[in-house]
Length: 264
View 1 (cartoon, rainbow, N blue to C red):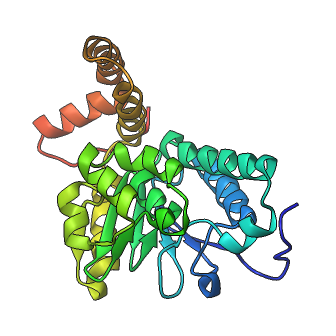
View 2 (cartoon, rainbow, N blue to C red):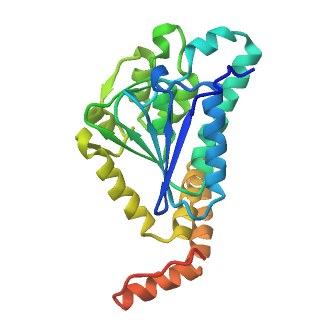
View 3 (cartoon, rainbow, N blue to C red):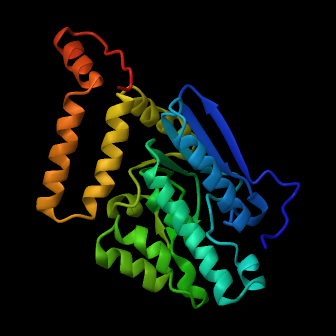
């Protein structure tokens, strides 16, 4: 059973001009991922994935930190194998959903992201961080190797860099996270929203069909060998090239005008 959080708004959702912001809203618990919060985030992302009006998603955290990972208090109260299997299966489904919905998801990291919170950052398609942000996979400090965060981390960082974080639990700062490939951009804290707005607008200005096609292709080809990846990518690109949006984009380029996308 999920712990009752009846009066709390665990996840805030704000929409404007093709951009949806989902804000983890457990600031008193440092936005730790309770089972209820994971379920609400899962439901919101599934709904967004089916909504063509949403072009970009921003994942943010309320309060002092971005996210400190799983709710250890909740875990300790349900410490049996079946409950833990259910929790980590639920979390894995959430992470896969982030990458399977057609819209790019940008992590807005204003401060600390640890354990499954760092996993969220690694799983998001893009990430922008304030210069005061810090990152760690700190489960090892309480006797837990961050095995599920390791999946996302090892697909963003080099092996040795990922293993160093996983084995030590040590924090890295935002600039080091950028250098290692965990995040895309670092800006002063007061410029974070403006930078994310610029990045989101750059994506929203593009063909929605091309963005959705490209995101899906990108993650599928990562799991293939090089030859199979090229065959798959060639097929995807052939279909993309004969789509209406591609024809419109090429015509607009040659006619020196802005394209009008239809998403077809």
